[in-house]
Length: 66
Image 1: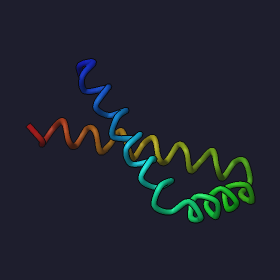
Image 2: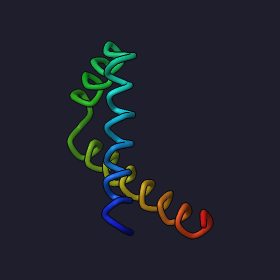
Image 3: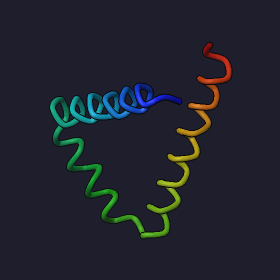
Image 4: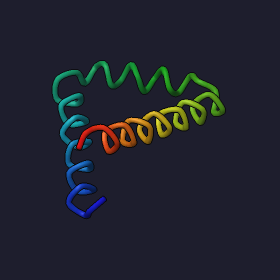
């Protein structure tokens, strides 16, 4: 993984997040409210599942993508 790959990944995250805020700001507010109502342990588990999913997707992309 090169510095260019990392920069590309960060740029894509910013583009996608920016689109969500620009196109559906009320959805973001509802999602934040739903997160506020979740217990801390549930939010932590959700974060860990998200990280594992991202790592698995990266592994698949690197293994089979080229």
